Image (cartoon, helix red, strand yellow):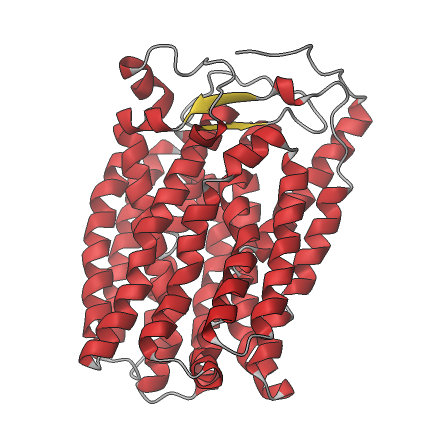
Length: 442
């Protein structure tokens, strides 16, 4: 690795305060990662009427966040190589607030889409950078920290899902139901801006690894598909379940509450699943439970949508515990923060490309057939794929070791010149953490 002089150690009290501030910033950022997404589904019908668009274009709206997560996520390593992560995330969250304001003021589809792209910047960069920040600053507390920020992410998703329809009803406009989520984004921005840089740290202390070489790791490829198909499930739920329940005969408020229930059930699961995932013997039993809950929930929702919708949405919520699981696995399957950054970027960015096909396909098939059969076929097939790649992802191996066998010297590579094809992280903002070999338990 190519490094300049090592950072000057900060006093112990300063380190603790700095780490506490970083932890708060990570959690607040996670709170904002899904609000811009989940706030759309409950008022999708009103948005369609307000913008005068078809269900096919509504499918584009529900898919756009996922595609943005994929495309914008790839810029994370380049921005991290050039600027402090705190500044990257502060800028991304500011862009999110601006995008929320823009799409709430949009009078047509094009401007609404432009606002959506801008709003997704914070989510995309937060997705790929937070796992490496946890691995670097809290290497011995991976489970609890991933649990904390995935719980915050679930809480934000719940607030967006539950709050949107009541806000639209109270204000008389779906526009207020979208723009209000810019406020917590600005709060998170302020916290990142007050985090100090570490004494003696420069951009030359940045280390990087080639992302492209991860193609030589079967585990990295399995994690990418695992992330993609579980995200496909989630974004079909977020984008279409509320509308499906409304079309099945439930009121808009009830459909919104059921979507909120789905997110709410996931909150306690998000808090505990990462801490359980760091225990290798529990990973495959947990995966089996998640898959079974997905199958039961989707089948029930398909065959009896108004019979026990709360049960079906709850079962699907348990299945969606795969999200917290895969976030933890990203940190567990890599030895160093730099490799975590590379693995996180590849897994999530390409994973969201896979996920993006789901909501779009549902919208197109609904427009063609006038039914939701295509939605259920799509999600149930993806559950089968999830079971296979999840099984591979829970093998107790490191992607570093798999890549090293094909690309010797990859893991300790020095600073790369093509930052768009590398991934890395800056030195800690308040403490110097030397990555070690680690263990499969994190």
